[in-house]
Amino acid sequence: MDLGIIRAGRAVLHVTDLDASRKFYVDGLGFIETESDETHLYLRGLEEHNHHSLLLKKAAKPSVEVMSYKVRHPDDLEKLAATFSEQGYETTWCERGSQHAIGRTLRVQDLSGLPLEFYAEMTVVERMLQRYDLYKGARIQRIDHFNCMVQNVEAAYHFYMKTLGFACSEYTATDEEAIWAAWLHQKPSVHDVAFMNGVGPRLHHVGFWLSDQLSLIHACDVLASIGYAKTIERGPGRHGLSNAFFLYLRDPDGHRIELYNGDYLTSDPDFKPIRWDLDDPRRATFWGHAAPDSWFDEASPVQHVVTKQVVATAEPILKKQKPTFML
Image (cartoon, rainbow, N blue to C red):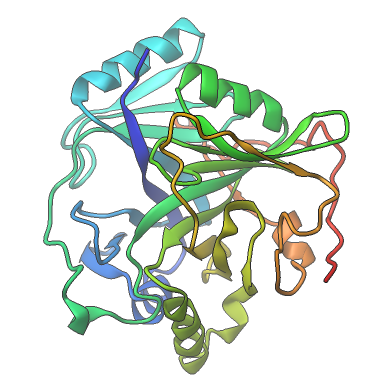
């Protein structure tokens, strides 16, 4: 059944200081501030016509409330609710008006314990793509993907492909062909969500698309100039997987953001997923410095969609392994 999922749509992150977040995301990275109040900061990229793709909510502790996917039509929400219910998942609805600038949404905890949200409608705002006078920082264009640490990547891989209709672009496998990491998509690019072997469930990062590599380099200069050089965790560099030019940053609450450019088209029906060997050092870093331990060990805790409590984590079923960087 076609469930109508189009793409990764928004992330809702809890942060402890909205002023600090605004300095990082708006002044540093160049997000458009659509709207804000004392407890909410709604942000979007320059090419986005929807109200926001990143919602920051003031809270006592940082966490991830939901990762949201856009669907084609409100009827698709009912299809998704039926699909999840048939498989024994507890769903909850956020009715129209309960969340600002977004219509009725469906929320559910997925197979791995990750909090998902699905929506069809969001307030339309002015697209700033050709407002070059507003291009600042990284000149963020749009949200691109989520990357999640989970205990069982292979189970997540099969659930998202068989139940939710995602397709695989690339994956990493062990010598025994166990899936170590997977990149899955609905839109015709490398991924809307990736799963990596690790302590989970946790959100590793949210990826945002840039129009060119120079925007990424310029972001480094801007961040350094306003005192955020230490937020640069990894990169610049290029992944083997996805071919992406990347930079990883940590916001003031520790949430990880990837600035991302340079992947490829995956829409052809005869496209075959690309397999990477776990021991291939180029899969994570085609070129660039080795990732620090924090990149493998640290990630954002996620909430339960019903209880709002942070979900407990557990060790992955596959042995953790940090790849060795080689030239």
